[in-house]
Length: 269
Length: 300
Image (cartoon, rainbow over all chains, first blue to last red; front, side, top):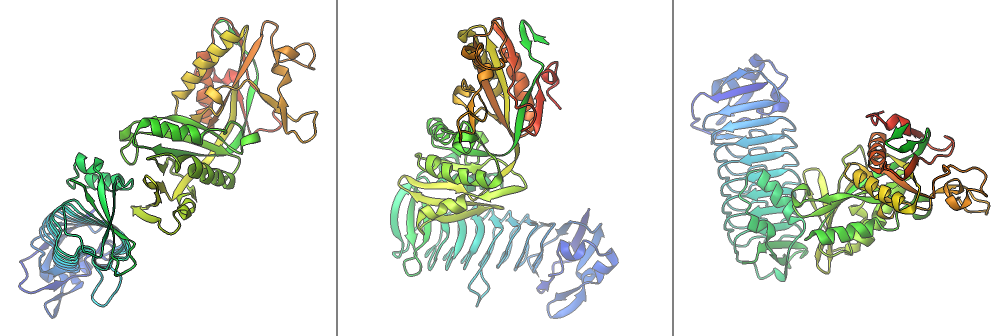
């Protein structure tokens, strides 16, 4: 059973719609869903003023329209699926616990901040701070997967303590900054200061990158865990080549200004 | 009953409840995967003396393994869950982690599991790292050729040990050839392992001994040299050599299928009879009658 929400018109101001989760909507009648409050700018309005509601409430929610200004879709969701035909706004899947969100277009800043489980798939590109800690918090995502087929901007995986972020395209600066654990895989070019301040965790950079001087080169080898990740990502549609599966990888350990137990892996050329 | 000229004795194999698991070992090449598998399944013929029983189930192609490398599937059995966990830690630690380029994965999903990688990780002396994909955690233990990757938890399930066939030949050559054919047929089947050397045991045993402290001793009823001196013989007059095939499986069905396939493959001129080992039905939880396996009757 699929519940369909279609934007009546592209909003002129940000809309906050954290009620759009299968957890909240799956057992409500349509009339009650239409009455749920969302914020249109600073004005609270019923959801039906922003979306037309159709279909049958269940485990799946389908959203149509340019949601670039619709924030907090899928926040704290724990089950079910959300499909967004178009772009998604900021804070998509914030603090998510489980389930799946798929966005056919781009997503704004703060994709899956502090998420703990589930999977977010962005077919396009994502903004800043995917999988990150909120400002003032030390710990970002602790579990789950954020799969970005396009590019991501700065600070992807900031404070990350578990889970997987995969970026099919290029990545901005400070990927994995202050990372505590988890894995960030970047298939395109990485920006500067990748892994700055990381204590533990793994950053896999498929393109040559400028490694901070506080990371020390260790060796060139074939990490036996890497094929598991790469085959998993290939199944999810990311551009994993046979060469990346069989390559040797160079390993740098860091960040020496912190615990020095993190690593950056990059295929040797 | 007969299969061709081979008589099938009206008796049963007495099998026991055990706990079993499947381990998948991968390596950079099939030769290293086999080396680790052979090492891990070495000295694992009988729980009586080895604390566990194990065998290589089959070689795995690269596309069948979690990391896309060639591998081997191993079945390991012990009398209870705790013992099985201990044997896994010992054998993966000593036989797989030590072997160049290997990684080790659980090959069984079940409601019962135990921490293996989570115990072996301490070999990393604080430098070990964990990785989690979905619900599965893996441990990366730094070793001298890079890293040993081992899954955190391994599934285990109730299993059946001690299914068996005793092949009674008029001469040793025929008995050995029949045993080899039976082993080849059984090894083509899933979920079973043959723990003895080449899948065959010549020193079948009975429970107890005239010597104190020995839990088992030679199966005199099937020793042709003792036909005239032992109390009762299980051998027909024309039999001069008997060989046993012991089968452990992840289910009674798997053991029955293996026994049925083994009987069909072994039967031939010169193999006078196929019998089975039992203890009068007093010890084992499973009685697998040979006649029930004939004519497509493997499924209980």
